[in-house]
Image (cartoon, rainbow, N blue to C red; front, side, top):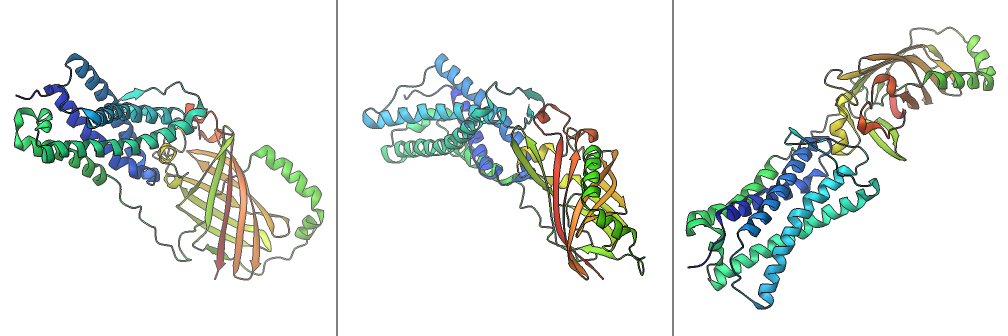
Length: 414
């Protein structure tokens, strides 16, 4: 009678195989999911650690109860042994390189093992992040190749050689289990694909009379603003004099409708690198006569949950209390009454930015180009993040104190 693996080894074998199939199915798509993939990243990490723990247990079981003797020698037997060793290296290396990848990321994303047990980061240098990332990806492909060889070898023995080798990994020589246990691998893979979020819905472009599609309107630090005011006044006395003698407006200032296709962007330094992102949802009401900027009335409302930097780990952190706290404070608002001309087609608007429940005086700079009923608007500003409590945790220690915002859009008036 052919010797079989222990029941513990059999259970661990098929459990690990199903989990690896799930990991491969999910891992292929994670890089393209953005913020929608944050929860899956956390699950991917938890299952990866589970695979690591089960593999260590499998090694312990194999030491406690050795595997059955090999049935085949020669190069075929050596190849089979090599594949087995490679599979163990994959089952250990893939989770460890993934753990190292998370531990050396610029922004430290906390990992909770199935949302309960905090998993500490490995004490590795930040410089090893690229190596960990490349190693994790390479091991995934090597693992897929090894699994394919392992399955091919099992089928060869069962279908071509008919030596019953596969029964060593099936309890009781049950035909039902012979079909059902390998089916678990397919179930794991299909489950991994099934829980992937669908394609992100594309928001229809609003007509000109609807929501404004422009950039966040952040504001400058007061000290910087005071210095720039002095510089502007010294550099452009003629502009100030012209403003003083400007004619009174002929009627009420026009309302401007920002056209689809505008761009909003923000960036912040992070330990020598730059993290860049955008807000995809916000609305605005803009009233202003370019010849009489003191007539300006600006209100911008930003959906803070729409912030993205194009990385699922970081995007998943942005709505949290450490950054935007969007659950308690879903929107940020910039209000400005009046603006001033600082040069040819250049303006500055002072107002109030309310972000994360904190209101602070802020300012924006912008330029207008074009004439008549259509204008191109572009501008920039700087927000001191700490007064608003943005970036107040351990993962933010490398962030610069100010966030730069740039924006550009087309606007039309009726």
